[in-house]
Image 1: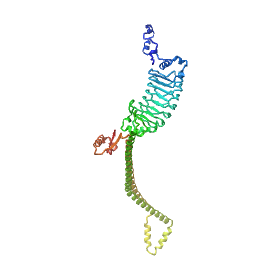
Image 2: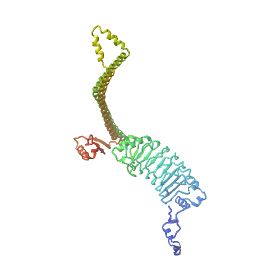
Image 3: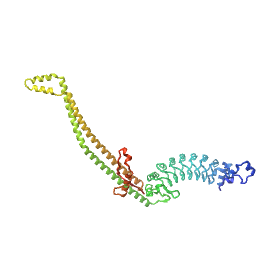
Image 4: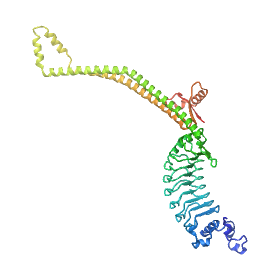
Length: 480
């Protein structure tokens, strides 16, 4: 059925000796036949499909040919397609084709298969807008691209390639069957959210490792068949985890087949739902308990801070009151000095009135001994500065209490949030990852503690003022 290069090379095993002397390179042609031309490839294609090549060249019945196929013949390129204007299905398997070309002349093409070949990129099919099925498996394609114009596509097989990410599928709204098995895909993300008609999805033998990533498939309401460890290809890391099937059946209850197994069983799905619901209830209860404990602890910290700050606050209030009293006396002294400076006659009159009584001499002595306003003001400022220094001392103490309170609150929140994240991680992984805080009575706790402390050398950190380490917490992580 298939023709080979050697059958049409036209070379004979036995060459004329004279020709061998004149053309020494002829010996190499025995091992490497002359490459075929375009007509030879088209002729072989016609032969494989039972088509008369001579009649085809004359245009006889070319529009009636709807299907062409060729297997393992080593074609290096697609050529001669202009002779088949009515072609609808083209299948080329086991060729040496690296680039798709010469397909623009096939406006009625609905199914294209170029597999087990050497394709390196998706290109050359953007004009084939009537394509509904595309099979490009077992090639060397590294990126999904140039498919935006194929809006009628329903089947796309790109398994056994080198694809690293799911992308370029946003415009394929009618896609129902997608096979990306045996690639290098690490995550799903939201790349399939617009492919809401997807019914069959095969992602086996990739590098997907997260339960949380699988929950992105809930955006595919019509998904019925999902494969992540199809025996034909192999498993993903996530499919080897415990509770893998339970997790998927809970989040994707409309699945009828999972990894080539029939899961269209009501009792099975109810069991998965009950299992996941219990796990969620358990972890939600623990999270709420943590939040409640955190709130209680923060309230106690606040109350303790208020109790500690009551002493410095009361002292500060008393000292501020003293400063205000001194400022009032300072203001009164200023007014008295101002009046004495502008009314000297008042002092003379007061002196005369006191002459007859004998008390005037004492008053005069007192007036003479009375300090000046400048001296009084200096005394007041000294007192105020002393009080301000004491206020600063109490304020420093209050600030230290506030800083200690803030650090304690931050530590409580950090520990609580970290514990919550651990619980959520345990839930997201379906219990495949579990954290356990050790106690000093645990044998493994002591061994871990001794290992950490034995690796610390105070001499290495002496220049930084570090003389030792203290272990606050040791956590053991279980990977099931």
